[in-house]
Image (cartoon, rainbow, N blue to C red):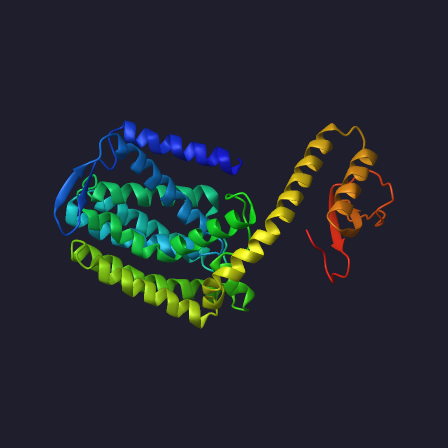
Length: 335
């Protein structure tokens, strides 16, 4: 399913939760002990909360063991919160045990995988358990505590939306510029990347417990401490120079925006033309035209059986299963 259909399905499921009477109905303002009844706004807030949590977990599922480990910490936190509020603590503790058994086989090198379905399921559960444990929004700390554990995914998602929006890319378009991808590109092994994220998340897990124990009174101090920790981690891993070079990043992104929009439009045209082609020769000519417009010097089409056909932009070839493009002057394939 495409990203838009997945999002629509998530919204419908979250709306069904509200229809069954579960949601954020009131909000307790911390420090002043004032309770605001949300009315119809509670439905919108519940949908945003559930859909946001569902996608946050899926976005960090880029390295084996990463999403499962963070979810295990979240389940441990929610089991404690549920035990204090007397709601679903056994179910949450059972999910923590299931995740512990899953991680035995999912930790790098993985033998089983979470997949989109598993990540969506866990994210939805975390969002729902947090609502139930908060007495429908009365206990603000019960909603805020999981957000500390999800500090890294929240930062990663915010940067991804900012990055894709500036460049004119679809918000839901996947890329390989997430935080864990940066660590992998720095030469870290998958196991070290996962352990590094575990270590940082454990610190935020302690902050989540502190936020709940203090009934929300320590949240301003904890937010400042969390910001400091993120900046220290960014500096150690050489992310901060990219984060703070806002002018250069925005300028480069805006310069690329028109070129990216042109490339996406050309690829959309190629996909539509491919559906209208009656022969492989017609598809080949359209492919060559698109490659020339994008600045490629040659195109090579390869069958799945390994047989290759002409690599010149003027050659006509038999039907093909996949293609690879090589940019002029590049040492390897570019897609």
